Image 1: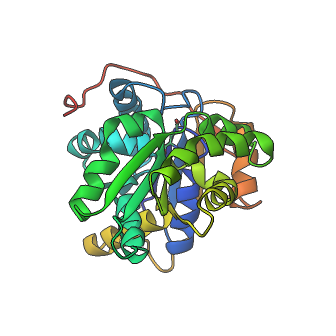
Image 2: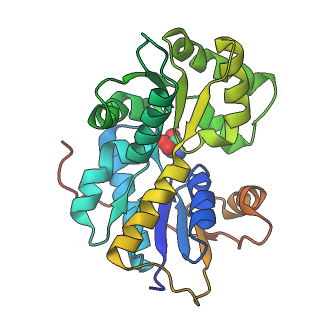
Amino acid sequence: MQAPVGVFDSGLGGLTVVRALRRRMPRESIVYLGDTARVPYGTRSAATVCRYAEACARVLTAHGMKALVVACNTVSAVALEPLRAALDVPVIGVVEPGASAGVAAALRLRQAGGTPTVGVLGTEGTVRSGAYERAVRQVSPEVRVVTQAAPLLVPLVEEGWLEGDVPRLAVRRYVEPLIAKGASVLVLGCTHYPLLEPVIREVAEGLKGGPVCIVDSAEASADALAELLAARGIEGAATGQARLSLLATDLPATFSTSARRFLGAEVPDAVQIDITDRPSTLPPLR
Ligand code: DGL
């Protein structure tokens, strides 16, 4: 099936998921929307995030998407079920795949007599929602979850400030409580954070005094999408030419430059689009 997969996030972060999707499913065309006019989502209320998510999904529906990947933990945490109810195409989020991968790693690293503990770094909205606690409990009630909101990390990534003292100090401030509570696995519960992975790893391992497993949900989400497309028989055709289209709601040139740095020089220019906000038609959040 030649229709594209729709993917969206508040900004650059979801490109970490696009990178994993392209590696795992090179035949799939992708339309990516970065809502750069309204980033960050993670500091906003669930109702506002839900409204923004609906508007993004509407744009991607108009591009004829055959499935939607919500490449944003904040949206996955608060708006996944309403999106599923409102859309005619299958919808995948990033929280469940990330939680499952975190549980698997914690059980693998379990120490005799210790409680396997997953630390989750996320936006304020994701942490407030309790979505990771719920998702982990569904997979394994014996794994403990500790969470930490890390509000400064998204602006650092959007700014391209990925190394040096400033990101190191900010990361330390957020990672320290998780390591102190016994986390041996850190789930990057925001799709922006994989861009800071080297700093997060260095700081976490320094604090722990040994290896820490860092989980990025992008690969697990790509596996979930591949499974879903195969189960429904809607994979991209073997002979088709896979395309990537980038849409941004503000500063498309800046967005294109970052996307190229991240996905490769052949990435096309991002096209600026306007999202007309209107009252939400999604059912109320649970
Ligand atoms: N990258 C998104 C997430 O995974 C949103 C970050 C933000 O806009 O605050 O939560």
